View 1 (cartoon, rainbow, N blue to C red):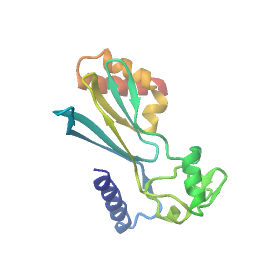
View 2: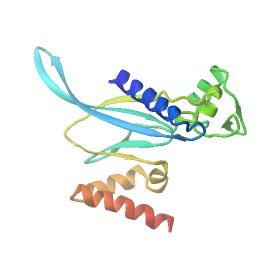
View 3: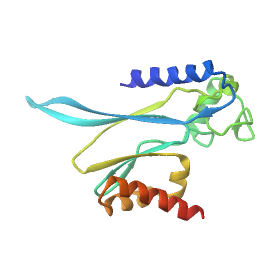
View 4: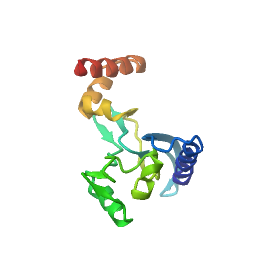
Length: 178
């Protein structure tokens, strides 16, 4: 799965380049739900796993009945590991930005900054799911600046339908920005 995700992100990046969109970019997050067989003490069981590949400042959380689990982090200069990655490959950081222009360290596109350390290689995580897990929420930085994981947990656990959950997330974001 991780190789498939990597190849997908590389292909998307190449397609953006073919379109000659050299100085624009995008963050991205994709998930894949799978069921895998495990053998424990001679018994075969099936367990659900969620793979999440992401880059940039898009976020993904899993909401259960009792908690929210964040699967992503911001890929930006403030992240110590990302800063170190940029510096280790000889990238340029000044004014707390890659080449003084961009806070993000991973993105699709942005070919004008690739030589300074921006990459389209996603970070991938794999988590096991259980019967309490109910929702996967993928959203832009704006959603997660507006609503905390706790806010999203409350919206999801106090709402009946998926459609109403989505409406409540949008409504809460609009209300906080106005």
